[in-house]
Amino acid sequence: MDLLRLKSFLVLAECLHFGRAAARLGIAQPHLSRRIRELEAEIGVSLFTRTQRRVEPTAAGITLRLRATRILEEVERAKMEARQIGTGAAGRLRIGFIHSSTYGMLPAIIRSFRAKRPAVVLDLVEMTMVEQIRALRSGDIDIGLLRSLPDCPDIAFETVMREPFRLAVPSDHGFARRKAVAMRDLSGEPLVLFPRETSPLFHARITAACERAAVTPVIVQEATQIHTVMGLVAAGIGLALVPASAERLPRAGAVLIDLVDPPEPADVSVAWPNGRMPLLVPPFLAAALEAAEGLAEGSPGKSRPRSTGRAKSTSSVSP
Image (cartoon, rainbow, N blue to C red; front, side, top):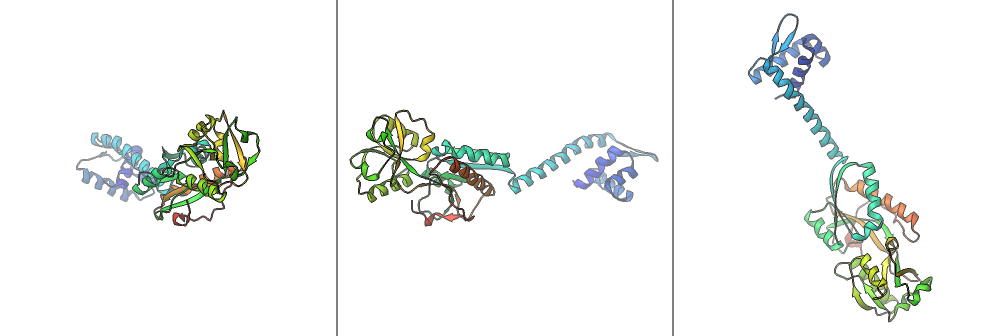
């Protein structure tokens, strides 16, 4: 059914006069008459009874008017929704995130993103870094928020923040009274370490710093989540090198102190499949950079890297 004919029918059904209806549509009266005849021919019944002074809808015309109004409203709604999704103003974005991003980064991103794209539905799934890479490859998520990526050129990323490491010690430890310690001071100290399998970036950065300081780490416990590591430190299990975002966690029984020669900072990155950037990635990335800037201003030591505006391949990153 031709939508132009249907619209012409509705205008005539409202005006009940061919001349006034044609004027409202901005067409000549013969053109309107032809459209109505073609619509009646298509349906196979008369839609109007015509007199010299006015026209009246038939029973079939009254029924069609009710349905046609809803049809045209639905068409307009479909056009609007398609336009919103096509321009990124609406849609759905599936986001994987690491747990530690909830300490400040993720909430700030979501607030910024939703302020600009309120019609976009966000599906948030907590995942480890390894799980996010797998989900990006399978298409289960559109975008990831993670620490860094191993050498996998099929994943693109943009680093949005660099976060320094600090030393977590039990509050009754001798280091707790110091303002800073050196990595060499950790020689012989029991350490709680992030495992290589689930936290390859943390593990690599910390062990590399130990190697530079000629320290052989005494690993007494491994844990994946930062809040778990902090709890083990508070329990006196050992010391731990943790990202500065641990400052936002409750840490009764544990103290964070600076390192003179800390490990290389941990990157916080936004990641997506290389060569296939979903439409909503750029606005999400913009929100992440805005959030990182705000967090960096409020947290000494954190920094937002200078963005080149280009996606970077993970093949150039050393985890």
